[in-house]
Picture (cartoon, rainbow, N blue to C red):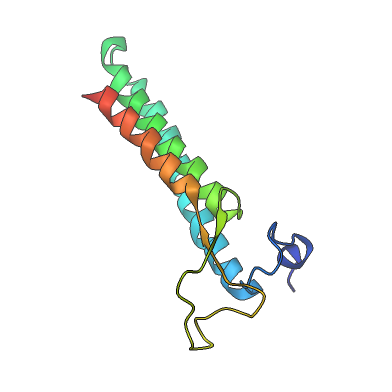
Length: 126
């Protein structure tokens, strides 16, 4: 029996054409990646205690990278960090054209914030 979370939490943009089935799949996949990244963060922090203090910074940077990625995937899986973009070329096929009230595509801008933050962390590691 479903708990009705998808029905209770409506999408922040009216007319969003994602049904509960695809939302549940996206949420499950991204939350799985979030759990793996979070576990990796704690593993890297734990492994840092096996090294001398002068070598721990490399483990801390790696833990920071995995935690930033975990936060980004959690944000995308929770339907946050996105914006609707109007469709420029509307398709005629009803499977992919969207509904008459929904002529938007969702763009997860948090993905690009994640890439920017991770690039800065990796620059620091060099």
